[in-house]
Image (cartoon, rainbow, N blue to C red; front, side, top):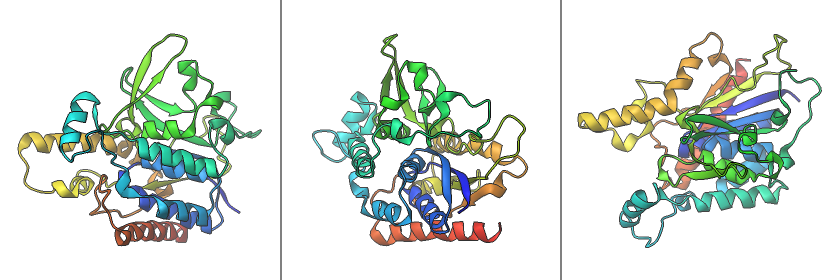
Length: 317
């Protein structure tokens, strides 16, 4: 059984493609030592780190009620609720349904807090601090202090015990697409300071290097990354297909800024020699990141695209 570390890119509904790729890797016998994910990649990462095999992961993804993800605030009237929420809640949707669903599904397989995802590794990089001894790492962005948070690694910054923190809360924070979902908050009980957390993709949507050793010793197993967003600038309209129309300069600039935040930083790292060689690239074109009305056929197609991409990657190894 081959071992590997796994890194999953964020990308909203396109995460179905990432799930398909992981399912294929599991079917091929891969065991994942550590898994990192951003946004929807954190959802798939959490389920995989919790020990779900290919059948379990496929089942939970197929049962997810996508249309319930954008859960409106009262009064629940389309457009009216979103407008009121944006002005008062800083996000059009609550994000409560997806958080509660993740919590229930993880609890069903015996995982609630990060204590349930602890791992011991006598052969780890000696520079690895003790707070890194977990199977799962979730990326989120602290916009109060302008920093990337890697949970559970960075809970100590808030004087919080990682073992006591709910995995679903960390994943929900990573899912906080700015202005789409209400942002999350994390409070330091010692200092009383509260940070506002949004989607990890704002600062690092694809941290492919997160598990790389720093002591000069060759890696004991590879890191495999799964990408679901296109390179820029050619793929900029693929992120939001519904906006692929003639836009005014200000709206076009806004689209470019959002796309660069999601892709630009990690794309720079991907240009380094050999980095792309360890990436599975799932073609999720023509599906928007917030296309939560995607039907059963469209969902099945994304899963299949991810599986095919993983099969192509493995054939080249």
